[in-house]
Length: 378
Image (cartoon, rainbow, N blue to C red):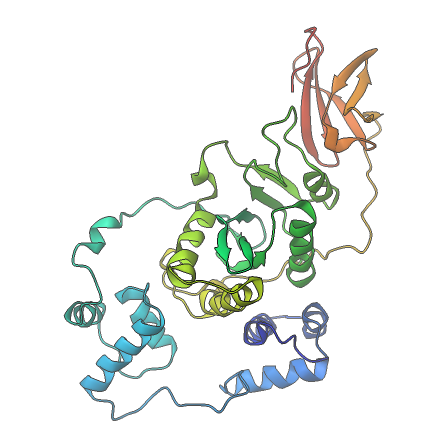
């Protein structure tokens, strides 16, 4: 089976990166990427020989007789391709491209300053901050919509998803809306390609949250719980909870969107695919000691199931079916759990506080009910 036309270079690079890992299952990777084993081994062989993964002729990146002027031109050319990159990123990328002579960071910075490509006070806007990250890939993914923007034929809603440990971009989709079917389709595509994470961090807005209603759970959230994925909602009005997503959005705006105008979703997606290849496999990331995200990411072992697993609870649980109004009956009283769970079976478990009941759906607590009060407490 041939590669999909869109983002073929990105798919090839991801495939050979994952296939080069120790104990990689090449056959399984071929199935995930929708290609034949013959095609997969062809690109693995080319990658192992140091050949380009594109269908274009190869151009050498190194020259033993490169002069200082030529090195300066290399810096300027790379900066023109990536105008948002600073001296550290540019130098690291030159090293990754195999340049035998690479100037120091201070020299690269001086070149940029000399050609008026850096604002002298720009560094004053950058302040180091403490970073927190998960210790393994796929322990936590972060997902969010970037602010939508106008195209010639409508509006584009960029949907993005990152792996917390590696900053690897799993999804960058030009969407026409922010509805449940659109997000679910993008999630399924990511699950089929990269496996499933242990947990997913989102904000409290639709379609994964519903902070304006009695319960914060939605149909999409219930589906994720059924897949065995722990859904974490960030603190309301605290976007820094999803700091890596916010930072990625700023990079996307600086390196892709800027003042560009797209004819529609197709053209926007083409630009997204090109950027995604650069971001995952070429752009040095300062939070990763100038490594690229793909160097730290590995697909998850847990595969996306063709059928949703059955919901099972322990023998000591009190199991109730949620009615159409989102309620269950406990001790003869109607107790609200959430409209999104209508028709689902939940488990009621005694809290450590007498008279307080924790309600679980699959593996996650979704409500807390205080039977000591006349009113329900979510």
